[in-house]
Structure formats: C-alpha cells, structure tokens
Image (spheres, rainbow, N blue to C red):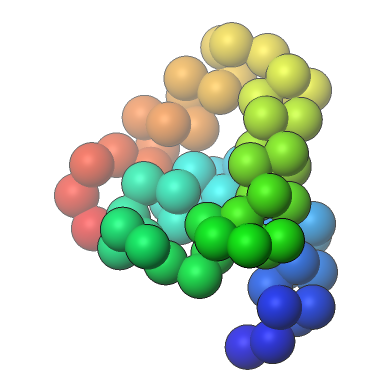
Length: 67
C-alpha cells in the first residue's frame, strides 16, 4: 500500500478500525511514521473529539485487547 493509499484509508476509516490498528500494529509500523503517522495521529484525535468520551469508550471496549 502506498503512503497516499494509507492516508486515504485513515481518512475513511471508522473509529473502531482506527483504534484496532492503533492498538495492535507492531511498534515502528509505517502506519505511525512519517506523514502517514502524522495524519493518523491527527485523525484519531479529531475522531475522538467528534464522538465524545462515551462513544470513544464503547468503541475501545468493542475493539478489546485480544486480536
């Protein structure tokens, strides 16, 4: 996947998909480095603010800690 495709995926992902990748991708993943990582961080912060704490907590519980 190219950086442009990764950025597009991030822009279109729902909160659970973002949280899942955030929680389970390996350390140093290209999803969290360079311009892609900057976009990921900004997008997940924006979504967290948009949905509010209750929806954020529910999404986090839905993702869980087990793959």
